[in-house]
Length: 135
Ligand SMILES: Nc1ncnc2c1ncn2[C@@H]1O[C@H](COP(=O)(O)OP(=O)(O)OP(=O)(O)O)[C@@H](O)[C@H]1O
Ligand SMILES: Nc1nc2c(c(=O)[nH]1)N[C@H]1C(S)=C(S)[C@@H](COP(=O)(O)O)O[C@H]1N2
Image (cartoon, rainbow, N blue to C red; front, top):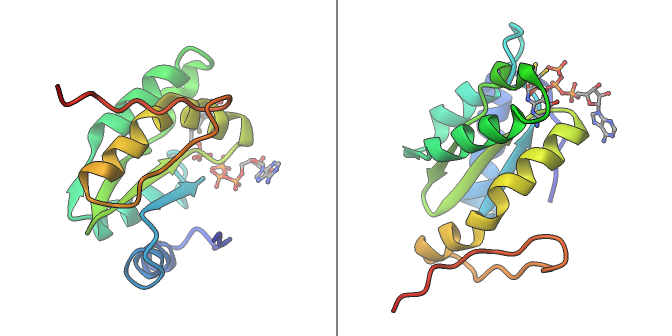
């Protein structure tokens, strides 16, 4: 499911909560609102609704994005866990979204495995998930 909502922190928080707690989405991705403009509040809304943060996602997305644009450091994008769902912030522009998703998505199915969520399968021509072997 997807929703288009305004840059308002309480609306963003309620929408994430609804998707996780009521719709049982194991993965929620947000787009936009991660920059330094006053109205960019998506990372704050994400932190407010998460139990635990996953700082590696923001770190990797910014590091990868720096290969494309020096302004990558302007994105405050983050990720975190609410219950057994993963929430990931992406920037707003479609090109940036693609660049960031390509970087972090290989780790997403295993993250959801570790939270006992559904087993995600990917189109391996697009994204190859990485699942460490147990033995
Ligand atoms: N579905 C789409 N297809 C093509 N372009 C889009 C789409 N959605 C957004 N854009 C463009 O991407 C840019 C950023 O979108 P949006 O305003 O939603 O993100 P934002 O992060 O809130 O913006 P800003 O970069 O101003 O902070 C805009 O230039 C917008 O026109
Ligand atoms: N991969 C990637 N990340 C990127 C960019 C980009 O072009 N590619 N643009 C940056 C810019 S210019 C800004 S202001 C921030 C925040 O964007 P947002 O407000 O659309 O979330 O993301 C940054 N991250």
